Length: 241
Image (cartoon, rainbow, N blue to C red):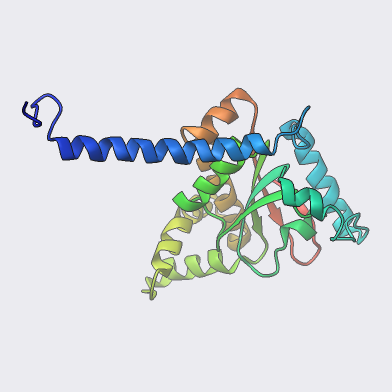
């Protein structure tokens, strides 16, 4: 019997395809098992509406601004967290060292699923992490969090004006932030940096909302909400856009 059938291709290639499909199935199954393993009888702790999740973290920010945090004992709940995680919100935050999401929103460990990159923009790696959060951890809310005086945005504005050439992988960062700055330039705002920071957040909110197939489908069904906000480093206040 001939192993090379024209309708199905050479046997080695068919085996490779079967192995690849099998590996993909195993990985997907592993994610599902992780999600099922942390689901106790009854509703999961983060089985709340997107609006309820947003209220919880914004109330936490009010406590942070007032210097009246509820979370003071970070040893509390360690045993429970070792068994599973139930984050109520996924954040795409800037990598700036002055931005600390858990403190900013006064949330205990395990409450926020955070992806950080300078300039808080959506890339493939960050998107995959957020997809895991909404699909397998049940995260109901995604927030793109920019901040005042963002150095990554300011540097991108300067590079665009001066046509500067940056070393290493920095050009990739600049290219990712450019769309928000292009939008800001059309507004002719009194404070170009503030406007660029806000437009960069809005641009990436739209990218997340339209990110197919995972996030876009959950947004369309109302199970997940995507919002944008800017954190003021001087006051600690988060303002929704």
